[in-house]
Structure formats: C-alpha cells, structure tokens
Length: 217
Image (tube, rainbow, N blue to C red; front, side):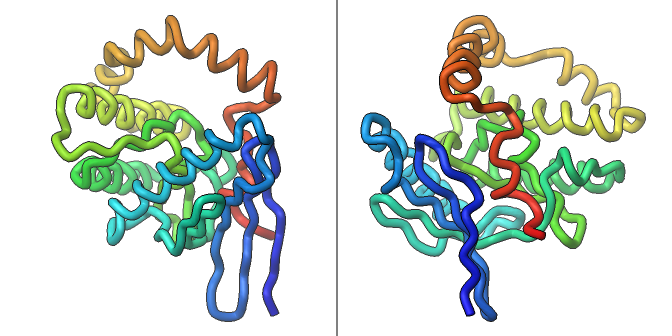
C-alpha cells in the first residue's frame, strides 16, 4: 500500500510525501503552480535536480531519484527540522560543519541555510541539508563562490549560537561578527524587497514548509 500525503501547496506547486513498504520519497510538482510563475517553478526544479546530481554520494543530502519538466523526486530523510529538534549537543554542529565543507568541496553552495527548516536533525541525530532550489554550483570555486561558502558557514554558526552558545570558539565569534560583502549588500538592498514579496505578497515566513522537511507523524 502506497501512502500519499500532501505536505505543502503554494504558488510554486505541491510537495508530497510518498511511502511504500520498500521506500519513501518527496515529490515536488510544479504542474499545479500559478500560470504566471510556473516558468520560475520549473527553473527551480531544474536547479535543484542539477545540484542533487552534483552531490550524488555526498553524505547528509537527499538523493535525486528522477526529474522531469514539472516533477522532481528525491529520497526522503527522516528527521525533524532544526527549530523543532533544537540540538544542544556540540557534536551535531561539528558534524554539520564537516558535511557543509563536503558540499563546498563538491562545488556546491547551499545559499539558503539561514532558514532553520533547511537543516534536519535525522532520526539518528545526524545533520542533513535539504531544499537546494537556491543553491549555487561552480566548477572553478572563484571569489564569489568562496564568499557564498563563507556565508553558508556563518549561517550555520548562527544556529550554533542559538542552540549551543557556550561552545562557540573565538574564531567562530569573529566569523559571526564579520559578514561577507555580498551578505552586506543583500541586507541593504535585496533582502527588504525579498521580505516584502515573500511575507507581504506571498504570506511566507522563514520557517514556512517545515512539514515537508521534518518528521512525519
């Protein structure tokens, strides 16, 4: 028997959870996206598919199962989003840092780790990263890549500061106090527009969609 559960529905389409006796998967479907934004929904699907393909074999990320124009299937990782699990073990963040470095070595910047639902605490208390629609891949890993990778690390440290503030090192505190130039420009220019569109027009919040990333009870 196949279990089919709608997890999220918005202007970009649907996210569903499918489970059978043998396997579980998450399916993003842009066919039901609003007509005026469907082109963007499809583009985000393509981006996530290409990123997951580039990360094949890297621990702590979903595995790409299939991708078509309006549909992306990826493996399901059981666990709870960061804001629900609230990990207070420094070892969790040490492992998360090493996994993030593995992403960067594969040429991928996540680019959306400020959102807690994009980091999972798995059923075995391991870190995992999901939702790669805004991720960036580069073969050369040039100056822009390094700046974005730095911000990935800085966002992870922000979460460490929230849940394990007493174990931050002096170096980590310096990183937290020193945003990159792209980050400073984003905060001054792009973020106000982003917040207006997502929160005022679309009604989203930073923790939107936690259900499709966390534990399914």
